[in-house]
Amino acid sequence: MKKRQFEILFFVLGVIIIGVMLYNLGWHDLVMNLRKVGWAILLVIGTRLIVYPLNTLSWRSITFYSKQERKQVSFLRMFRITISGYAINYITPVMALGGEPYRILALKKDLGVKKATSSVLTYAMMHILSHFIFWIIGFLLFIIFFYNKAPHFIYWTSVVFIFISMIAISFIIKGYKNGIVVGFFKFLEKIPYLRNYVKKKMTEEFKHNIVEIDTQMTELFNNHRSSFFLGLFYETLSRIVSCLEILVILYSIGVGIDILDSIIINAETTLLANIMFVFPMQVGIREGGLTFALMSLGLNKNLGVFTGIVLRISELAWIIIGIGMIKVKRFGKHE
Image (cartoon, rainbow, N blue to C red; front, top):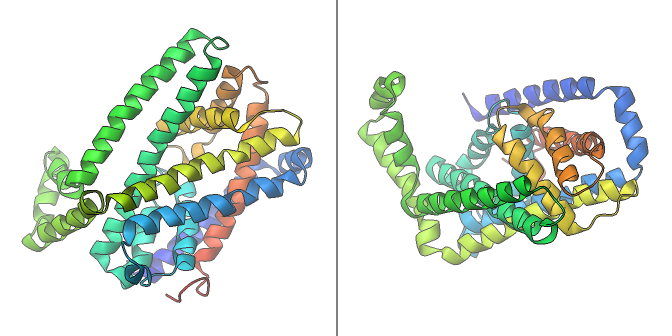
């Protein structure tokens, strides 16, 4: 399928999902919750004007290693692709991975298929890595500040997830050192129903291509470690900044929390949402996660659904923007 056909497919799918989301939210509930949060909804939505540029800086840091390379694709264009890619991820039914093929297609003309693929896969790994680092930060904060205020099972669960996150980080770092694409296809060769198909696909040219993609991915960690850590810093910072959404929402209705509280709430909520990854936009899962997180901090658990709905309104706004940007060609370099 050609790039233009993919763009049309993503655009149409996005419009349909937006309609379904608006229908499910219901006009009455939408207006009621907007009235509660008031003009603060603009601050909630505006938070991502900081988050998405940080995501873009992270992606560029691990893709281009010199000023000359960065001239290949402008910041504004990658910013647009970042927003559209996340919008597609939000509406993807399984594992929220639809944005990655779109990003590869958007960059392949400038970087070539192999470089575009390695760039997107490397950033996807960075995105996951920052998740685990953020969860460690969130659960450490919970252990430090709420040890005597929360049930012991939550404390020990936090310890377990910190341990699991550290193991996951070691595996991801190993992937950066050795590559993941070749190993992934070797794994597929061992699956009975896929074995024959994969073997047919593994021509000498195909093997050469996936080895080259792996080589480009390992180049980052093995030879440009400063770029790796800079990208990781930007991506982790974007997660911390995104916690301002919860802070603003609760402040708008008179619930006094600080940024540390919002980091803990977001860490617990996003962990549950990622465990239940098969649900598009984690329908119902996020609200449950917010309810549990608020309860663990001794806050009113009934605010979980309200906070979740307001966050969905913000996401809906950015999905509309992101889907619209798929068709905008003058935002950054022309494609």
